[in-house]
Image (spheres, rainbow, N blue to C red):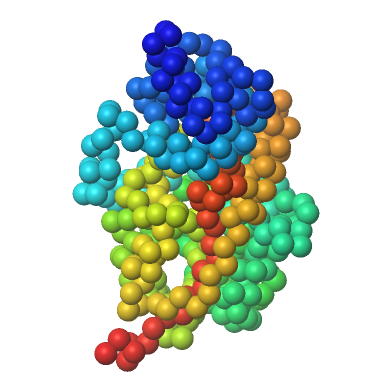
Amino acid sequence: MQLLRRPVEHFFSRADVSINGSRPWDIRVNDNRFYREVLTKGSLGLGESYMRGQWSTEDLEGLFYRLCSSNLERTSQRIPGQNFGPLIDLFINKQTHSRAKSNAEHHYNLGNDLFFEFLGKFKNYSCGYFDDAETLDDAQIAKMHKLCQLLDLKEGDRLLDVGGGWGEFAKFAATKYNCDVTSINIAQEQINHAREHCRDTSVEIVKSDYRDMTGSYNKIAVIAMFTHVGHKNYRQFMQTMSRLLEPGGKMVMETVGGVESKTRCEPWTNKYIFPGGLIPSMEQIDHSINGLFQRDSVDEFGDDYAVTLQHWHRNFISAWPRLRAHYSESMRLMFEYFFLSVAGDFRAKGLLHYHIAFSKISSNATH
């Protein structure tokens, strides 16, 4: 075991993290199998061994802030057993019609009760806007207003809400800005709630893949959905949005962004949280809109996502006594690892978060 421990200690020391050290972000090993997991599986093994309780730390967010700041989190994804992953992902479409449906069901159909315990009053599974807000609920209201303002949303507008989740933004836009909203989704548990939540409003909840949509809209909102599209489909997605959007129409996207262009998801996240997910770079987004949209504005507020994740984690831990009868300890550790590792990555600027406003390019402008 000493032979396995030394390289692991050396690896983490490069990020100022000690094994069995005394600082809050240091790793406490509870089971020596942790060393083999990290050496053979990299970032996947690090996450899986946390879910098994093989290691712990007082400050998981602080640990990942250091791993990401030192680039070790990225290095841990490149181990011999995963060398073929990036090559395969260049050619395999992980977000076909059938795969997109199963990918969505993997996470979003876990149970509405679980998600509603940590999301707060407003069921937005996306970043709050903490510019002038202190509470999570106020930050979500501010974010929804911000999106509507970027869309220049007005009474009578026909808004397409792509990947509408539990219907929160659709209801907000319909009731606060008096517009007609079509909200599309492929996760049945979310659809069931959204239809009830938006009852007696000008919102229509439609079960549909974005590729199958028809109709005409003068505004489109794409909120926390583009990370589920996949690099093989970026161009098709934008072509579809251009087809659905009227001339002179506006589109706003809220999305996590990467600092470099990738074709594969981090292995642990891909297996346990968002199968087939991929974080786009601004370069990839710009390439996908070429000749279809012009990018009018960009607002980056990744620091707010770290705060949002901290709120979600506190809510989740507070609710766990109610949830534990229906969900395993491994599930608790999985969500804890997800919230705080990603928060650390946002703090380290390894992840970014954008509001991007687009306007449709007229057909005449392309000639």
